[in-house]
Image (cartoon, rainbow, N blue to C red; front, side, top):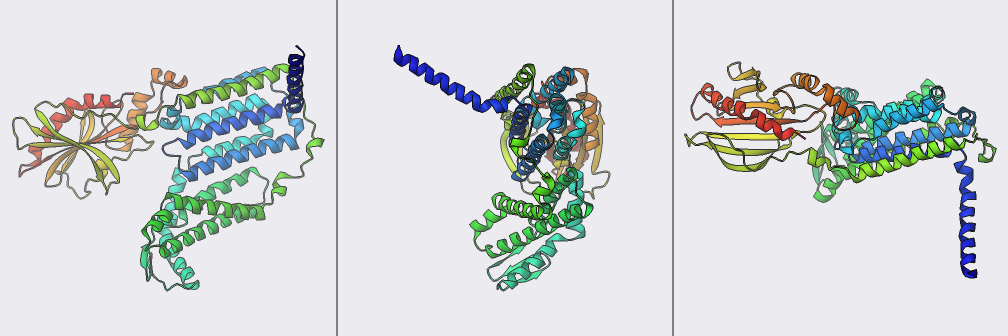
Amino acid sequence: MGKSSIKNNKIIAAKTKILLKIQPFIEYQWFYLLGIFSTLAAWHLNIIRTHPIESISEEIAFYSIHWGVILYLLWHDIKQKPQLQENTPSWFASWLGLLLLFFAIIRPVHLWHLDFIVFRVAPIVAGLGLGLLSFGFSGFRQHWRLFAVLCLMLFPFGKIVTILNFIFNSLLHFNDLTAAISAFLLHYVGFQVNYSGNVVTLPTGQVRVLYACTGGPVIISLLRLTLLSVVFPLSWWRRLALAIAATIVGFFTGVIRVALLAIVVNNQESFDYWHGSTGGGIFMTFATLTFACCCNWLLPLEDLAGNQPDAAEITQPKVYLKRHLFLAGTWLGIMVTAIYLIATQINISVINSISLPDKLLLNQWQQTQVTFVKDDELETDFQKFNFINNKNQKQELEILYKLNAGTYYHNPFVSEINQNLDGNQFQKIYSDVVGYYTLYDDGKKAYLASCINPRGGGTINLSQFMQNRYKYDFTGDRILKWVFGQGVLRDDRCLWTKLSAPLNETPATDIYPVLEAVWLENYTKWQSFLHL
């Protein structure tokens, strides 16, 4: 009994010691807020890490930096403005914020990947909910910078990036300029080098500088980071200096990379490494760290943070027990939800692929083979089925399929059509049953091409595709499922399909009815491949 009593006393003493250490933290609201914000940051970065488009290292770093700024600003506001925490949010604001927060996050991970609206808008809704839960309605004015950084992180820069790439590539000719300066750099350090246009030549070989290998993409990435300056009280010349620094650092990073590639051009393994994503990621990291040093020189951290008081001088208001429980329960609920959704996450590759049968059953046609082919010109893979006609063994049919599971629409079967085809060779057809499709020939084969939509008829351009999405996706039952996280609101998938048959000296107009008969008879069956 004595030993047991001593052991129990030691356990009680240890628990008391631990409680005394954590008590100074759990008494204050900032402890829970930092925990909730950090958990949401980790949850969102996990979504980015597994996203089929955003998961490249540059984008992960971009989102990580923005979340770092959000946490820094939150900590800075807590330390500098403890009086802002004195006004505890009303219970109405807290519960409304909690509702918005869980409305946004309680969705399967694969829906974040498939639904562009959820990916861009849901974090903003979660941010609004988190703001109401943490600071109430009046807190948005004092903590506006947190929400501004969140919006900058989620802003779709696609069109702006396209314009900047056009300026750097087509107007400023970054590839030629990078080749010239890289050649000068190599000559300066002692290499025998020549350049002509965008080609850098050394005795060991030559490299052709394409825009993707220049500093243009790096400059764009760094310029996106300079937008964070809008949340700090900086003069206009400092913001301009940041943009100039981003441009200089990004450009010369590209110059150094091209010079290195020219040096190792005769070593295929080294060239592939530095030319590939790993080597590119190293240079991007180098550029980001160099730009960070420039930022610290132009904008010393103490200027941004102001005069921070010592932790001992900070007086934070304590929260009541009910508020304790509410914040702790919210934090715990977010962690449990995140763990559950990650554990039950569906592999996005399963959704982004279609399980086509090895054999397609077509009336009057016999399948001869099925293969996967790679089109180097179109830079994509296709699944190809070949058939012969049961009645006419000389008549052949080929069907190509390719699933587009992204948030864009670009049909390779339509874009590959020769623009010089006259009206008799290229026809756009509309049918009430199967929608739009094209008929054309190249003198050797007759073709039928279209995109099978998840709902509605086929389409051959972006305008038709989006009309289908608005008409068939934005319906009452689908909106209700989307609200409760049971499906995507706008389904951007489509199955690119091309049917072809050799002409064999037969007029294309005689082959078109054969292709149309197969298309009209099988469209609904092939559309079922897209049903989740």
